Image (cartoon, rainbow, N blue to C red; front, side, top):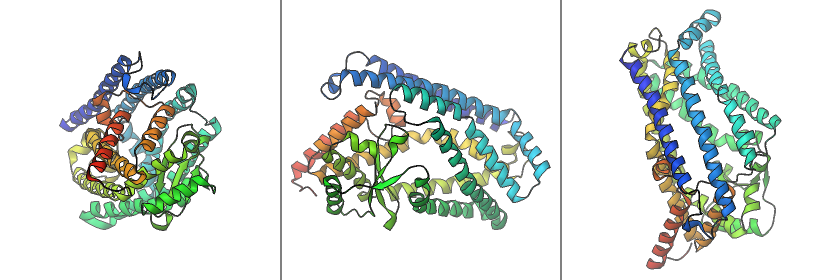
Length: 425
């Protein structure tokens, strides 16, 4: 074991220890508030729904603990048991050193690792989600989704891996820069094509029927300067009773998507407020900002990978002979999450800031905050969201503020608007 071997082991175990500690911290905090419904939520949510949300939170948290332990054991086994050097050597002996063979090896390792999570995914869907009344997925549909995912991985992922290896072989010392450009171009293309070609493979999208809701949402989009190709309803209920809304695509392919479950749960004014929130993300430029940061992060990752690919100790730490870019890609992919985990709080903080801004935009666009607050309360109740997360846990993981935090921020934003006398949009 060299120094980097020990460092990698510390990273893997450190991440798992932090995850388990945060998980336990949140569990204790939720249990402490599991008796009488807290004062802040009285009149907002029924006692039955509150207790059910506590039970759901704790059940998901216990499964998360198992998931953390299992994922850690799998990663430790893959990295330190010697199975990767054996598999890579055996594969080369049978299929050679060609670029297509190397890409196939990377794809097969990734597919094999994804299989290890399927049993717990099954348990989450058909035990926990079923127990709390969320599951609408059939076993056939569950397996079909995963087979479709593997098929798309083969059709899209394998060609991308092969293209990257060709770029590395062709580009010389600046291969990492060309790799960054290649992956960035591929991701941009997917952002354009996914709503048109990929998403319909998993869900059915139908135009929102003519009526008062469609008229209200269209007027809101026009009033806020948001242009969309259409407003569609997605059949999310065929898998789950959880609900959501989003817009997807770029340019003339942009469309507004509402889950059918959302239409069942909210009033028209509340649905309009939810849409105004999503439009707020667009009007505030959140999507381009996130894409830019993602692109810069990818550039940094490619550069670090290039440095590691030249370091003999990086290969030796895991039992490989130095020099194989395929091995460097594989090891980097396995270890990257143990490093990026520690920047999760910064990403969560940034995301929550965007949510506050989108909420404030929605309140201004609607001329009041009551509709959005009503929608948030219903969505938290219907989805059995954790209403009392530990501040450290939510600060680390939550991409959206907790319900009370959002309500308080909305109240402040409305007060600020009234104070300066700004008109509603």
